[in-house]
Length: 230
Image (cartoon, rainbow, N blue to C red; front, side, top):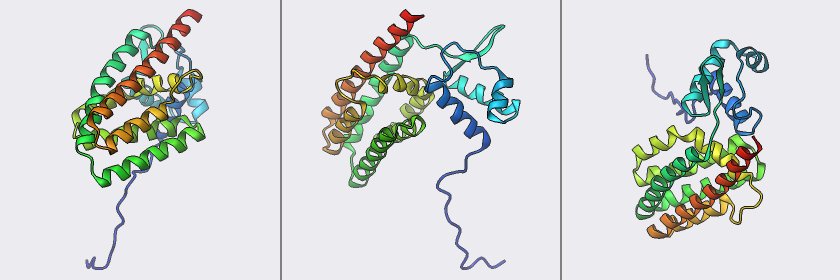
């Protein structure tokens, strides 16, 4: 068969499967507080609400459990995972170490092409923040940090961050909605981006640390209030 002249366009983004769509909807529902921490996730109502089979719901719950957003309790079944300050502090400690090292290395390895990509990622994040769409915000934030880790060639560290992404995104939902923060998350990330683009390795590292310190302080206050209310 002569295939001369045939052009196949590259598939840049794989189409979403039904499971992917359900996972996104369920994740967003947990992040937005539609499902509260400790709330049971009952299969039948979920199947009816989403219009999918029990198999898809079960697969989704297993996936969200691996992300740390769901936990299964004996004699009770799957519930929305609770998150306390002790757990959150460990996540912030891990982020501080991995993200500061990645930002420092990315600043040392910055290129014109990477700078353009990082600026574009920050613009997308700004647009997402303005639209206040949680799923788009989390996707844009993930894309921003992925660029930094990949430019730093910290691929194993990025895999670790990805495994914590569910919990990280949940903490972001808590801190982004805080009204009393002195510096916005976007401003912190702009500072990180600016330092990297200037090839200021130390500045990039310190900008990450300032961001994590601010976010951790807010999360601690919010989680303490939730515990008090309970």
